[in-house]
Amino acid sequence: MGLETYTCRAIVIGGGVVGLAVARALAARLPDVWLVEAEARLGQGISSRNSEVIHAGIYYPQGSLKARLCIRGREQLYAYCQSRQVPFRRCGKFIVAASETQCDTLRAILQQGLANGVEDLAWLDQAGTLALEPALRAVAAISSPSTGILDVQQYVMCLEADLLDRGGQVLMRARAEQLDCVAQGIRVRLGGEQSCWLEAPLVINCAGLDATALLATGTAGHGSEWQRTWYAKGNYFSYQGQVPFQRLIYPIPEPGGLGIHLMLDQGGQARFGPDVDWVEERDYRVDAGGRERFASAIRRYWPTLDANRLQPAYAGIRPKLRPQGEAATDFILDTPAQHGTKGLYSLLGIESPGLTSSLALADTLVAEIDLLGDL
Image 1 (tube, helix red, strand yellow):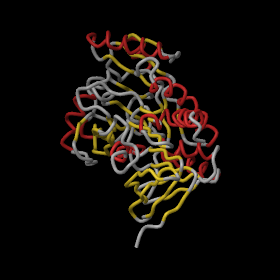
Image 2 (image 1 turned 135 degrees about the horizontal axis):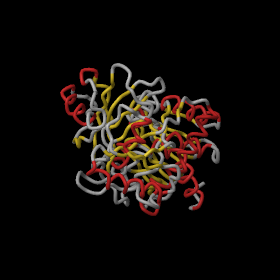
Image 3 (image 1 turned 30 degrees about the vertical axis):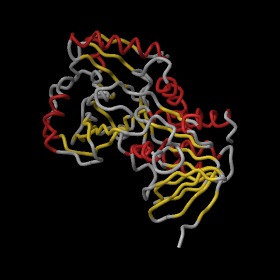
Image 4 (image 1 turned 180 degrees about the vertical axis):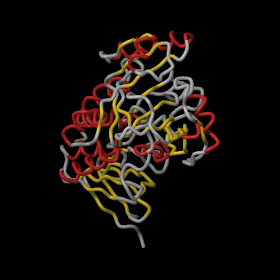
């Protein structure tokens, strides 16, 4: 017996913060928007395994989507959290040079941030740094007051509520397994507990780690040049006890990530991470044996760290569109022109600052869909 086929106006694949933001924005313009998610809960993939940081927009190449959408999305996200009572805190952060040899790199980061339009950055010498964070070891720091933190799960719940209020639908435990071209548009095969075919003239692929693989599953989407995702795992350790810092503390970035940094949750509890561990398979286990490696990295800016208080917490995986050793890509917004399939759009390689940029990404994509006449 064949699978049942259902139709709707638009399908969004992937229930992380980006997929939810896209579905929410589409539902303000279109009736019958369906969001499909493979897991039993929304926001359980990349969205639940990150630093929960609202980034300022400092590190990214000038003019890139990452730079522009991070800065725009940052203010949208603060305003959204304020209006919807999502817990957040504009706590600020320091990016630190732990030695004189790192100061030139730190100055380059400052110039990059200023060129991107992050106007509130300030250079602090050692005395200025220690006056604000006395426990910090640093010869200089960049102060970023616009950096903050939020409760991601509360944000996810509010985005879902907005989508439902606008008449959208959410289908859980429904994994998108195949994309095919049909006369009516695009047909998506859903597996799992909700096995069926779902057809729509407009499909948005926000499947995160699965986004590139999905494009190779059927007759739709083969035109994209991005046919593979590489996995850069990031481990996190929690800290048992209080830390003597009021701000987030970031070292100089490393290839593939921003370095093992200090994060604070809404209650002031600290965790450290992520590192960068290129892996072949998805593995979210955190090896307690990495404690000393983490401690060594942290002591470069916090020399009195008690390593015994570090405990394995969780891990996340960044979706990279280029392998280890190659330059990172910008956010990729593929349209029907790239896919060779009418009505198919994909958001690919959405790693940091994807959370910060989520509302701006959604607005940008919907504007592109409108421009191309698919709304």
